[in-house]
Image (tube, rainbow, N blue to C red; front, top):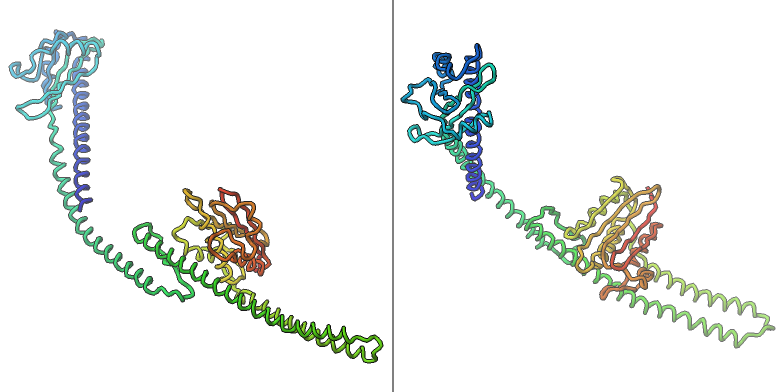
Amino acid sequence: MLICILSILGSAVLSYFILRNNASEQSRTQMQKKSDAMMSALDYAVSHSQVDTKDLPSVLGNEIFEISDINKQDIILYDLQGDYLISNKDFNLVSPKKVPMDIVNDLLTSDKRLDKKSYDDKTKSTVTSSYMILKNNMLEAIAIVYFPYYHNDSAYLDVFNKYVKYIILIDLFIIIFSIWLSWLISKNLTNTLTRFSERINRINFFQKDLRPIRYYKNDELGTLVKAYNKMILQIQDQKERLSHTEREHAWREMAKQVAHEVKNPLTPMKLTIQNFERKFDPNDLQIREKVKKMSSTVIDQIDLIATVASAFSQFAQLPEKNNEVFNLTKEISHIIEIFSGDRIFLHSNRNDIMINMDKIYLNRIITNLVTNARQAEFPGREMIINIDVEQISKRIFVVVSDNGTGIPDEILERIFEPNFTSKSSGMGLGLTMVRKMIQDYNGEITVKSETGKGTQFTISLPSNI
């Protein structure tokens, strides 16, 4: 309603000035046309012979009435001293009787039309008094022509009043429409909030795939969605930390078990060799049998150690890969949706970069690199993360760059080492795991960084489609 009221006031004020200016312009145009027509008629009347000022009453005695009737306009002629000569009106009705000398001097000096405005109380209208020089066929000034032009400046107010009535009717319709639209918007807002509430209530820490809410409008609800997606990210981060803790505990238990299993076969191997050395006799006829028996015993124990090592190796491996063909750019776009509150920009030189890969592997790789970039934000600088996907010949490149704090040179070479981390939290397995997964696809990852400017990770993978 406030907008409608402001619309009425704005339209009314604007219309008032437009109509007033149009009325003034129309009045000026009409006056110009009348003055041109009358002067043309007067010029024609005095062009048949060489006429002087004193000849005008006789030359224009009848012509002036005809010209006045045709143009519906009063005409008064004065001599070059400003004294009355002739008019279409009776002398007693003529006003003014004499032209002021300042007007006469201005006319003779400029030789142009001179207009003087005044207000007539009798007719309640504005009077524009026009003075012009009349010349004979020798282009000599012979008289001053005066004619009054009456026009009502308030005539446009009738049009204005009618226009405002229409505006009010239209705005009344807009008000009714606005009430309906506001009800519709509030209903939609309520439904959206209800949907968000249901999504939040369904959050489960043990859920494998916590999906973010897709909402791209920059409004109050957008802030709520960003907070929700940020919470989802924190939950996933905590789940990852918990997973790391569990794996670390499993590693410790497995290390104890491996140490125990390795130690068990070493003892009989040692006793067998010591016993063989003590009883060794090169002249013994059964020496070959004894050597063969000792070798068999040692080999059996070695095989046992190899079995333990193989089991340990299988435990250390990543989950089994489940490869599938998908669009790399689109999949990365889906992955970074969880970071909707950040300025992350995805660029690609092609829309159809296909790859045969495990989506879980790719998700862990991109999420880890983006999370590291977010945690390296430079104080006082807005974090910007760019992800560039390119396919050049038979290689696919994924570049993740940021404008964060960067990595110092002294630790840059160690960031892929297991258990190495420069953060106060974390186990230092993230980038090690990323490199291992990339290497599983015959790829490689490199890093460039400059302290205070940012870091760039470049992943190079072979095109396997």
